[in-house]
Image 1 (cartoon, rainbow, N blue to C red):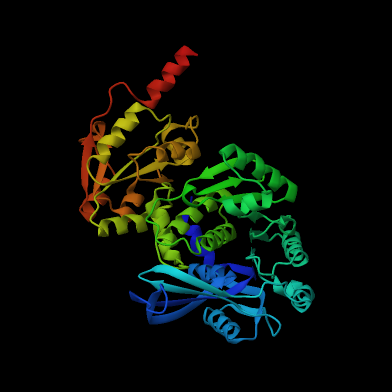
Image 2 (cartoon, rainbow, N blue to C red):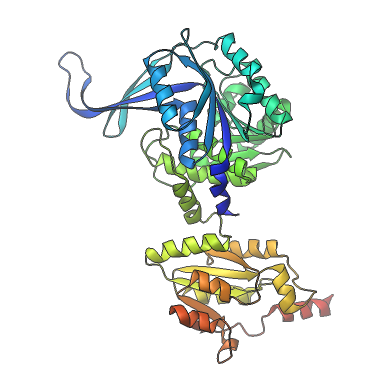
Length: 480
């Protein structure tokens, strides 16, 4: 998995359609109970407002670096003006966010003390947006989508996502090769038919199915049924501390565990998942990789208070430190190693073809890891193996050799090496310790000059007697 793909988010244009709101926070101290009634008295110390609802999705996307166009309907009231102002400050294209005098801007106000909510009051009138807004979108559909790579429908059930509007947007997106991502609400999922990804949480899934879900088998069977019925490519079910369950377009269920982190506040975590998946799909990740990254993003914001966001650098850092993606590009490995060295970690490096991974290799990795904190392994690409071993090698493809190395707990990162010797990688990573087999001791090695130039140390390890890929190949040949 190439973490650097995320840097392409700056070229990404995303259309967000949905229910836009204002979240207000009144914060203060509670030191006494009111003499008028048995309720706490909040001594106000600060007031602030944030974008809420679909606006929180926009906030997340903006923090990740995407360019955003929005469509929706809000009031001409003070809160509507505030919403437009905050979107403008983020550089959001608001041409299709209509302010209508018949609409009240939805506002949620939370009373907070010591990062704990003890009251929320909502100002809202739930009703379908006027036909004038649907007409605005219908009459300008080509312009609404001009330059857009991803459509996000953020439905909070407040009246913006009418069935005819939703289907018009999803159909246009599908006809023009634009992925559509839906965060659903309510019981009418027909309006989401044909979407690329739909992301209900467990409660929302139970609501639309009209039944309780008790087992993993229930999730799989009911989820497959719903996905097939609505012709949704991917049903991505968010499950709080259990992570994400994906039922993909092949009808296969895959589970992606949540990333463990202290949970402070789950407010807005669903919006973060939607935003992360939108960005990941937009820059070219698979739906499966998008699920993993979305879990990482959600764990970050749940460790903060309120409807929090995370930056692109935070997300990349969390991905790198998660251990979910051990295979990294050399340029990313350089970033990782530099950061780890700044934290005082000792970096160990070794390299090889590692064709037909065997017990001898594992023993070597364990010895290498004992010299430091982080073990980076460079594995020869298929083309460089052929140059070293001949046209009949490797036996195991590069992709599968990398996969096997990544599965070993003692290995922290894996880099594919196109060259036959590691001088280039060593000059870039400059690991503290470079490990070679004892059979290299006393021999001329081209990488020695590079290691000496930056002050690295070379260590030699004992090899398991009789264990080698060549011997294993010969034995298999004799037996079969």
